[in-house]
Amino acid sequence: MRLYQARLPVAADTRLSVVVRTPAAGPTRLKAAVAFTDAPTTFVTFDLGSTGGTGWERRTIDLSAHAGRTIAQLGLQAEGSDDAYDIRVGQLAVHDGPVDAVAAPSGLTVLGAADVSATSKSLRLSWTGSGQVHHYDVYRRDPDGSRTYLGATPNDAYFVPRLDRVGAETSTTVEVEAVGAEYGRSAAATTTVTWDGTPPDGTNLALGRPATASGQCAAEEGPAKAVNGSVTGGTSDKWCATTSAPWLEVDLGSARRITRFTVRHAQAGGESAAWNTRDFTVQVRSAAGDPWTTAVTVTGNTAAVTDHPVTVTARYVRLAVTRPTQGSDPAARIYEFEAWGS
Image (cartoon, rainbow, N blue to C red; front, side, top):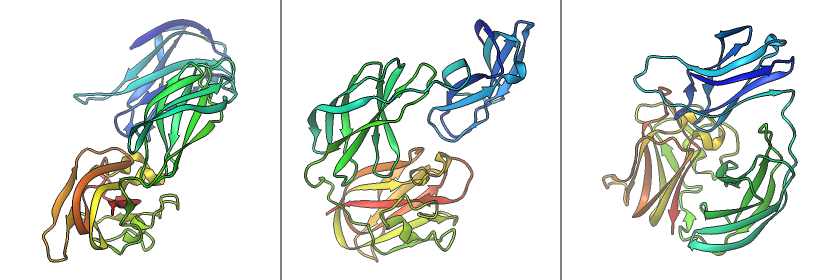
């Protein structure tokens, strides 16, 4: 696919960068294609490799081997024999030297907040700009340490239509980063949004409760790790199992009213998005001799954290995994299995 005609001289520090996004982690099967003025119909290609998840990722290619030549055409080349092919290209850039540094915005302030529901707010944000920037990216910091993208603007103010409270968090950190013309990023300016009162979902009833499972991958990856309230203890801070049809069961101690299940998958603990649980169910029962009842069924999940509102009463809750990852890896990896209620 020939995209652009150009006359761009290549120096010893010239770089080509491509920003791509795929629907699942794996090979992009995409190459950047460059033709030079001394052979304008012959393309040199550069493989963009594989993605590690479903977010935007940048590939930077060193063009120093072609110093002294001049770029005549830029394009992309896709390879493969699949019936369908899906890839997004967010940016194609050529630049000399390191990416320009960008100063951080300052004075990030919540000008106003309004309740959208018992567990969400709308926000009006404002900050002092940091000079010549392309745009500002706005994020929220999640309780597990990850970030959720809220939006972008070229201005020094932004309206967040809905910021959701996660679990029982008492405050949420909002971050704003400046992005330069060459897509260099600044440090983040931060501010805090405070949540009042106890969340309607109550408390995590599964926290610290006795847990059993179909098996475990290693001695330090037993079922108790999925109810210890932590996802930041490294890659062994999880329940892992490679058994056929893996399951994890938690005894809440007595029949409790449950309003929501939350499952924190592999990516929530810092592992690859390709290992997030794809298909699973959550089952409940009030007594050990009762049959299991399915409260939640999920297929095709790719997210690191999944929330599942329910209205059930149960003592025993079970996570049953039917497809543990996005591909053929057989290991179920669960960093936390939470049952919220009272």
